[in-house]
Length: 306
Image (tube, rainbow, N blue to C red):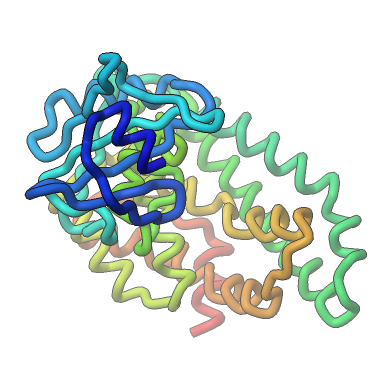
């Protein structure tokens, strides 16, 4: 990789550090990041190019052949020069999620189709996966599946209520978490076109599941409202997304891949998840005066665990 960059970009790089799928080094007073685009230059990459044209801190370097990417071992890479360090965690207090299309579009029907397909895929294999577990974990996992399928149905209910609403499209990180590196917001393989509520929903989910700290959730809602406010409809979309059990489907995927998962931990998280679903609308109202409908069963379940 180092020799390829020296040749194509005529940069004298002696050493590269690797972080997941990216390589980086410091060159003079700038940082150089070599970022994978993937096996083909897709739509996400071209939107990223457009955004970087107006960026005061980062710019894409062209190769000696005047191309935006170079091909290496079957993948395209581009070189990003940055005046600020990107190989540290995102500071959510300053994160701006850019709008790509100013003309809004109906997102809910597309989401429901995507969620239904994912749910169907996992439900078809659920019984097979459960049979592979030890006897002590089998019942726990069956209870988990029952609970999260119920959450899934509630997600559909909320999405049905949003079917006619149009949302602006943003360039979103697929899984924004407290441990997402800044550089990942420039990695086309980890980005998607969606509403910015997706980023914030995933961040809240990961934040809460890590320690069940509702105070941190309150602080995060206040940060969103100050840094990158959501509309009434976007908060509703975020809340609907929170009912879709991404973390449970991650566990199913890992089981299919033969990986070990901590079923008692996932079960413990599920026991307190209703508290998040119950508390978040109150935090949103306190910060924005936007009201969200809380299902009665969420209230009952959350309050029964206090």
